[in-house]
Image (cartoon, rainbow, N blue to C red):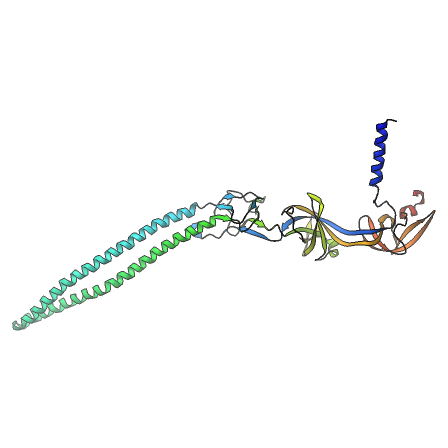
Length: 400
């Protein structure tokens, strides 16, 4: 026989022999670590996240604003970094309009001030003229004592008219500054209003550049306005209150998974779970069941309950959106006796095993406990290392 072929067969024999160790067809009573569990798929998410929402912007600046800048999905951002920019063109137009209005109001206020000063000067001039006319009429009345009665009455009436005109000028001169002051206050209110509108508009511009509120991984949210939902992108116009993105706190992670309705009663909050990344299945992460939903729903032709598993350790490899497997630990021990499932015979409410004693076979009743896909925990008059015979060989001796 060729030497290379002989070596190949020898290696193959060693490999086959080593692969057979520890398999369930190793028919002996065993003792040591045993685990009963259920494994379901899931997806990672952050326990806490900061959600970036479309800001509430006053209606006078517009109703919808386009996204003109957006950080890359999955980018590591730091507090204060620019992550979203909205189109501010309508606000800039509003600012320009209000600046023109403010200039007009300021011009009106200056014009009003000058006009008020001119009016006072005119009233003072009128007062001097009327005072002179009043004095003249007074002298005429005093000089009319030697005139006829009709002439005296005429002089008296003219004096009364002049007195009325003088009093009117004095009243106007007293009231005009007060009325002008009211007008100036009204005009000043208009100026302040325009300045406030400008200040508010410039402050609103800050809302159009959204910055990261904390360190983390930037995640673009889903725009569900389409028949086929997709992530928000540049050019979209979210409504007020819509979530545009989120920055999860990856120091505290959870797995969103589920449990089949048939196994619902086997799990409960506080139960230990082993979480494994699909991308890194060899590394287990410890978790506990935090919450189990009260409502059952259909998923892939089966009825399930949603389960939230909190991962109780921090690891930078755990990122939101990664797929995982969640192994619910229903039962775990280090020193129970257990044996392969094909060695446990169940009939009429009892359980039996078959021990190999030389050429003899002994049937023994045992009490079964937790079971997984390969082994079942037992209690009874047995001990670790005893050789077993599968019940199908006992029932069909020709297979022995």
